[in-house]
Image (cartoon, rainbow over all chains, first blue to last red; front, side, top):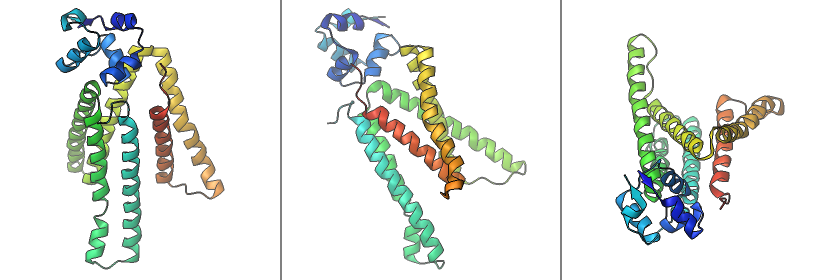
Length: 62
Length: 195
């Protein structure tokens, strides 16, 4: 699944570690999400959408 | 609630304490067996004493599992599944080898077999993740550094121990290597992560 996580993170000026802390996941998980190696669960996808104040479909696309 | 970031630190302490208790109970068990050859309720209790710290180790692993984030939880489950597969295949192979005339193997080997499969699956997962994140060259460089950190002092210990009169049985060399792995894991867990 493609996603805009890296771009959204860049617009906020956050590091992967900062995003990981805000989502309570590991930095490796943020990296795996950004590179498309891991697709998040629905609760995590909602948490990501809430963090960046977007809708889920604005961040992830199949 | 403990954050995902704090979880490995807690796990490290909980596991170290449980393993030390386990090693202590093994030491107590061995000493007591030699000094008290006759059966008694106390002897039975001491012979069974490693079970309690084994349960503590399992609890430490379960607590860490519950504190992981979802990706690592899934990866750990997959690694445990591969470990169970290795254990199952290994037990079938050992059973056939017994039928073929080789000595019977103790059931105690089931756990090391499963642990080895689990460890190899975790290492493979870690290596492939690291290659995807930092590239093959950087991963190989880091893996070589980690191997050297464990192997070189262990080799030095194995060579120096007989001359210095230190214990140099196979088990002490394995324990020394384990100590180096624990130091390395501790360093990886407690060092400050780059921003």
